[in-house]
Length: 344
Image (cartoon, rainbow, N blue to C red; front, side, top):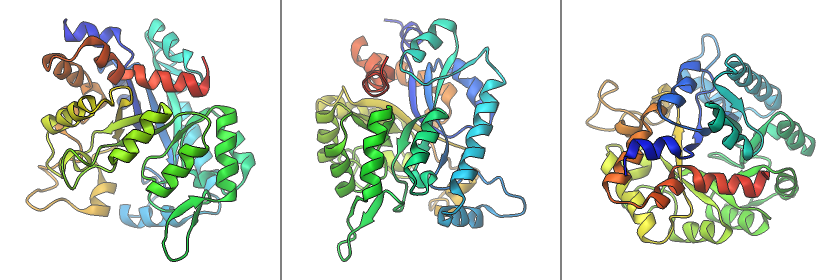
């Protein structure tokens, strides 16, 4: 089996990508043989610093705290992303249905769904769920690193539960056909949403915690719940999620090996979480000990950009994986979930 042929014939899908502001990074999907991705221009904070005269850390803290007017700011960023893609109709298909992925592959284009990393954009108004769906958002991560209007925090224990608005929003997302993403959600919240959702849910970017101690965020209970509901775990490309700040491509592959060996091959997908490598991350966390800004990168080197995705296919072929499993990991699992939720 020639790995390049397999890659080119397969549906290849990245579930979480933040390059809404750079045409070159989206055009690179063709070089990477990537059929589809979920582009995330909006969320519970501004993904990139687009303010004048405000340093990254100040901008990060301000946008994370902001609530009023957040829907308006998010609509502007969503429109910028749409205009960028519409500038090249020969290369991109803005996707709203699962069958758009098949159409894009047939036409030699890249299918791009819009997603959101946190529901602060709704400002607690159920009408805005419909507005963002009408504007093409098809994947909604319910929370980011802190509670928003979908969350009630229990006094004392601090556990998260769905608020009344959160319950209404989940039901409406099921009705409209929006993929629910529980990345970064604590267990109590994750468990409740899975029980309430009529459709499969996903973790668009994460990693199992049992492979490399101290890394990852998905326990066996998370993985079992995702398998039971027919959902997805999109494997993160960031080093610290896989095996600390110096994780290697081999560590990534061993994580994938673990998931297959434990019987989770039907939930594995390509998560990515690709973004600029990255003033935000360094401003928030700092460069790890023993490294410098010049020598260290947030992402595993072999898959640090979307054009490098074929490295995964090649490695899985070389590891002796059957073609059926490789196709599932590359994109068939993601396509299955999108068909179940969006139709088509």
